[in-house]
Image (tube, rainbow, N blue to C red; front, side, top):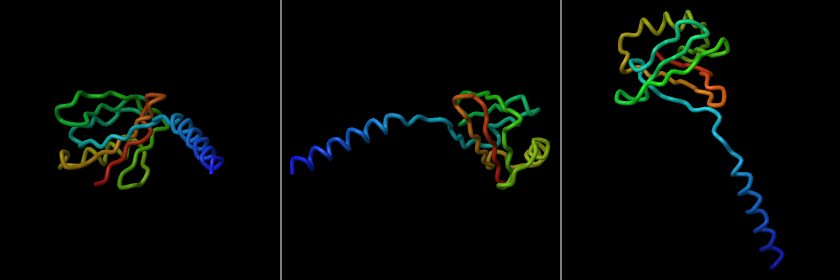
Length: 112
């Protein structure tokens, strides 16, 4: 019985040290299209607010940033064209994936 308890304690200690190694790499934001500014070029940035009262965040996009409309990957030009046609901007949700280590946007997704 003592061996079993010792083994359980050892496994718990190992699991605690493994859990401490987790760190957040990316954050996803769900914002209204009315609180989101589309990047002008592949090396510019997006500006968004999580809520109407929240402060704006400006984060750089890169040539590797993925743009999606209805789950389909599109170019930045197609993305801009599609987003600018949306009339109900406050009711349309944009998902922004922000990579924290590089401080860049990984992807921007809109479902129309």
